[in-house]
Image 1 (tube, helix red, strand yellow):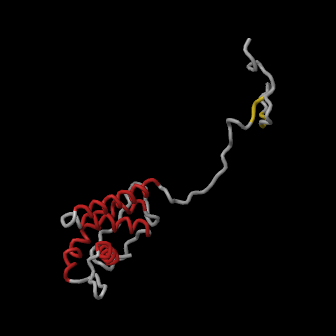
Image 2 (cartoon, helix red, strand yellow):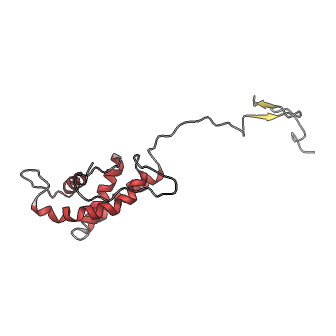
Image 3 (cartoon, one colour):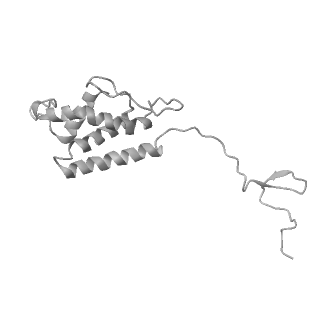
Length: 159
C-alpha cells in the first residue's frame, strides 16, 4: 500500500472523485494531495506499533521512515492501513465539514482502540492446571483428584 492508495480511498470516502470518469486525481483534489503526506507521516507513528509488520528492537521505539512521495510502500497490515485512512480523513476535512470529520475521527479512535486492545490477534492455547477444585491433600501430603467426596478431617465440623 502506498500514499497514493490512501489518497484514492480518502477521495472515495469523501465522494470527491470525478463523477463521469471515476478518477480521483483531479484538479479539485490537489489541495488534499498536497496535505496528505504531512498528515500521514504524523499518524503513522500512532498506528505502526500495532501493525503485524512492526519491527521492534530492544531500546528503540518502532517507527517507519517518513513518506516523501506517493509511490513508496507503507509497511502496514490491512487493518492498520484502513485505520490510518480514517485518521487522515478526519484531519483532512476538519475545516470543510466538521460533522463528517468528527465521524471519521470517531471511527479512527474506535479502530485504534481495537488495535491497542490486541483484539483479533491470534494467540496460542496452553493448558491451565486447576489448583482450586481439582482435588485435595491427605494427611500425608499426597494430592488426590477430587472425586466428589472429601474425607472427614479436623475441619469437617465445628466443635
